[in-house]
Amino acid sequence: MREAPASPRTESSGAEISIEIDGRRFHLHTEGSSRSIEVEVATGERIALQRWGFGAHLRALDAHARMEGAGLDFDAEGFALDVLRDSGVAESCFTELAPLALWWALCGLHEPSVGVLPEGWWQVGEVRARLRPWTFAERTQVLEESLVVLADGARELNLERYLRGMLDASVVERVPAAPLESLDGATTAALLEAVVRVNADSASPEDRLLESSGEQARVLAEVTLKLCRALGWTPAQVWATPAAEVDRLLTMLKLTEPPAPPPRQAPASRALRLSDFPDAVVIQVEDD
Image (cartoon, rainbow, N blue to C red; front, top):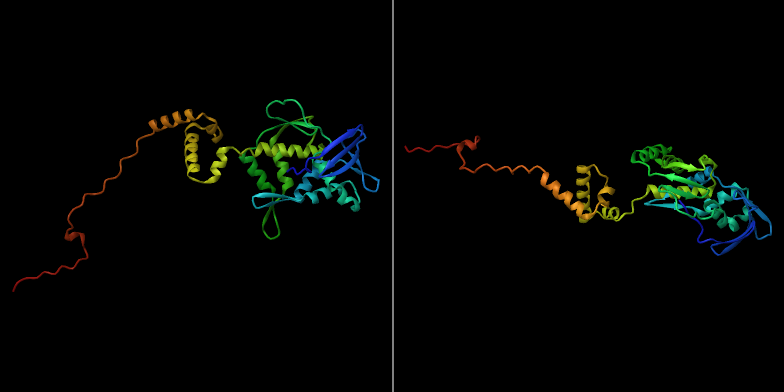
């Protein structure tokens, strides 16, 4: 979800900040607030970028992010122009300020977090959040509720509705406990990134092996499902178990499995009789 400009570099002096984005330098004035900034444009004029909020961020993602095959296509330029329009910036400044608008919406003035947080907690922009993965049932329900039926009968994903549902399911607690709608865009972007990471935790070596669909994938799937059925475990629990322990479990399962029934014996062969051919025509030849 996050497509920030490449490697922005900042230099600050009080309320003035100089930032370089994609080789272009911008001079900003913050007036001690992270909610709005002013930027000097080529004409010498100062242009204000107002606070970019949670709702605007999700709506812009819905408008400018599209599924393309197995990936996500993000129209960064279109997103940046929405940010500028939201602040009432004149179109004549769009090209000059588009990189800064994207940075403002996705990164902003938030400093990187320091220190170690308790397990399950994330520092995301201006808040700390405790996150959990959503369940399969929750994801299925949110996905179904996010599909919109078009005039031609096709169904299209409403990304804003989907992301709101994912956040509702995965964000357990926030400090400060302010409504999501009160978050700024940069915090929203960081929160979405963290929630997606928590819910897309499928990059383990075992997952990649299963995706290969080869012989090794088949063996792994068979062993995993066998232990899951026998022990009530999840695949992740099986894969995290030491190999020697898995070997012991498989040996014990094999020893306690009921013996396979003996193969059925084929009936013994015998010479064919006339009764085996009920439709046969019998011709009897006798001597005169």
